[in-house]
Structures are given as structure tokens and as C-alpha cells.
Image (cartoon, rainbow, N blue to C red; front, side, top):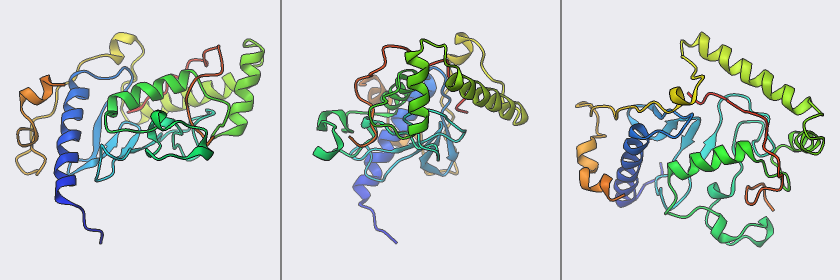
Length: 228
């Protein structure tokens, strides 16, 4: 079994607890943050974000759990975006080191980048070539070619039906998306104590497939998937 540096564990847990509190008190529109397992701080149910032990020095992995037809999302739901690529110098990727992950990034910047990516795909080096071709046809025809849009609509309706089956109320207005939530109270039986990891002063202190500059000039059709 791999042995982890205790200092990495302590610092990553503190960083994640701070970020979770911030995102639960000031949510990013369209996203609700929960843990997959209350005893595991490193797996978040957003879509699905999995953090490495040495976070924030290494990037997390981001995967959608519902089907997503998008130029920059793999068939298995993995998101391909520069901000989630390790901070290494890789001339073959076509990315600048400054476009990749660095420790100043956080979950909020990831979510905002993903929202931007959903609306403005990068089709130069796509993760889903077929979706990229369809998107370009839709964009270049100024919306007359409907194949891309119809696939998106079917997926949106499918996620709504799935949410209803799970008893989840799907937000339909901006106000519903932006409802503030409260950070959960610490569980006395858990090792993840909020008070242990931060105090109020901490909070107040506050070529490979990739996404860089958009090449579209036309926004993607509405993709109101529900990441709950």
C-alpha cells in the first residue's frame, strides 16, 4: 500500500475543507457540492471530482456522471481542459505551462472553467471528434444544422427524468440555481472536523485535448445538465 507524506495529507485536507465551506456558502451556479462518502474528503459529488493526496500541488480529475455530448468531454465523462493537466512542460501538447494546473487554482476556478468550456468548446484538439464535427457544422450553419442540438436536448431531457426518479428537484430558474446552502455541522464521529482544519480568519483571508482560447465565436446551445 502506498505511504503518503503526513504533511501532504494534512495540508490537502485543510485546503479541501476550506474550499468546500466556501462553495457551500457561496455556490457556483448550477453546482451542488457533496461528498461521495462522508468519511472520504478526496471524492466529491459535483460531477465527480477526485483529488490527489498532494492537492493543491497536483490537479484533481473531473468526470461527468451523466452522458455528455461535447467536443471536450470523453465518452466516459472525463473532462479535457488545460487547467486540469499536470504542471509539466510538454511541447507536444501545444499548451503553455501557464495554461496548466498550478497550486493557486481551486475547485471554484475549475467549476467556472468547466462552465465556460460547456458554452464555448475548443474544437482544435477535441476529446470527442464526432461531437466536434457536429458542433462545427451547427456553428458554421448559424444553427440551421440541428444534429448537434438535438443530441444535446435528448441528453438534457434524460438527465431531468433521471433526477425526477431520484427524487431530486431540478432547478429551472437562475434564482433556484443560486440558492445559498449552509456548510454541514461537524460530525463528532468523523475525523473531518471543520474547526480542526480552519478558523474564521482562514476563510476571510481568502495539442493534447485541451481548452484554451475559444475558436468558435458562437456560443454552444444551452446545456442545462444537472450536476447533482
